[in-house]
Image 1: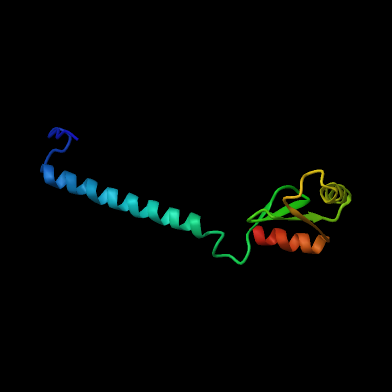
Image 2: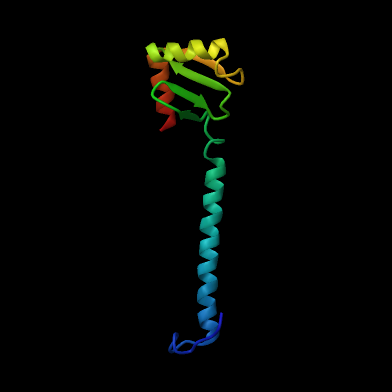
Length: 107
């Protein structure tokens, strides 16, 4: 950065650069804390769930799919069991109360 004395009337060059160092330190600390929070958000909880639709919730690793026991949910579950969507996931048909408990864990 080029020193322009007209921009910083009354301050020496080393005083202005010290102000920038403080700002950089604060920004780096905030960035570090944000990264730590993002990496630890799901790993610190007992289980993290993601709601994919009004009838489907998956776990954080997406290897188990919880499907709500409704007309549409039964159709999706039957297709998944038959292998229409592949065999990478394990579908589980759950009742309304279990689905609601899982959806409360999302918040």
